Image (cartoon, rainbow, N blue to C red; front, side, top):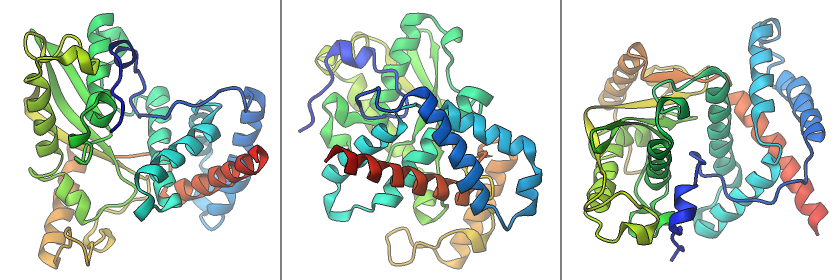
Length: 312
């Protein structure tokens, strides 16, 4: 069973994307900058070699470079720690590159949001008091990873990557959930259904709002006698996909052979639902294509392997 946060650890947990704690200092900023420039000038250029529009889009390349430079200088060590933790938890069904690709995409979205306000609906430090911001960030950490707070029975729930939260009266209101998706398929359809993210969020909220010993889980100010957390009556779900994602029936994975498998009619309907989400601004496209993310993942995985060899 995972050890829950102490109250102090939980309150100061400001990492919304759940990066594992790592030692810093192995990659200096200058070395990191050179690493990123090589990634942009060689790896991303090569993967887009057959796309003449990419080379001509100087603004896109500049934006990608800025986003990559925004990543933590310790990104290699952090990703190494993430892989190790994921391997320990999922050793029986572990796909190293697939696991890393999803994490890399989330890190890229975090950096893009910091620079270009990709998710304006999320809370900003300057918009709330320090106490409200701190509790709001604790709620985000709780929703993303209940096991870190001692709720291992809810760790298997399918939870979104990020939430927008506002403070109203004595309650924290979850208005929007945000999920990063490199691939749209039957599992995505399930997650966006009433039995997906919405159900998982409600299960967690019911548990937290009924807590009598919230401080033991690092959740001071919540539970019985504290602030309630509830889902907005106008709750919305948002997803962010790579910039070249096509929203058509033929581009959506059917998930054959799984419990999320879709027939033609279901796929057509899901495609229309996604197009409607895009028209409402609830489906956003990131700065990086799927091929970009794959190349970045390969690059980081190669650097991780070099680091592992150097540590032997």
